Amino acid sequence: ATQSVLALDGGTARLTAPTLDFAARQASLQAEETRYAGRSLLAQVASLRLVAGRVETIARTVVEKTRNLYRAVEELLEPRAGRVRSRVDGTYHLKARDAVVRAERDVDVDGEKIRLG
Image 1 (spheres, rainbow, N blue to C red):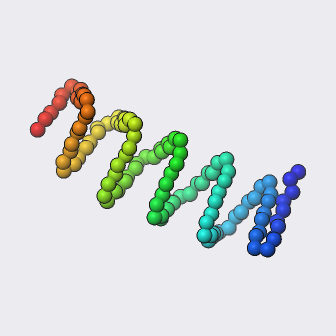
Image 2 (image 1 turned 90 degrees about the vertical axis):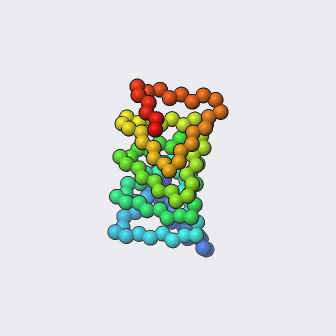
């Protein structure tokens, strides 16, 4: 069986244990830099607010599932992709002061009715 070890060495405190349970009504962690390394991380919270100067996500695949998603961008939203596909069960609505569609090759519009103007 793996033993639990608490080591205090100069300015370093190290806790090693096969299982660590932490319970508190309120907790605070203040650190100049924090690192987590593990196989998985699960967080269940009622509300989450992240305030940051920059957020960078690097992943092979990102899957988001939500009932509603709202994004507000003050200046520029620029998705870059090899391909883009939107799948909408209901109505796809695009509203803009001006809209421009440019294609290097073909533009296909296929519909039962096409209304212009």
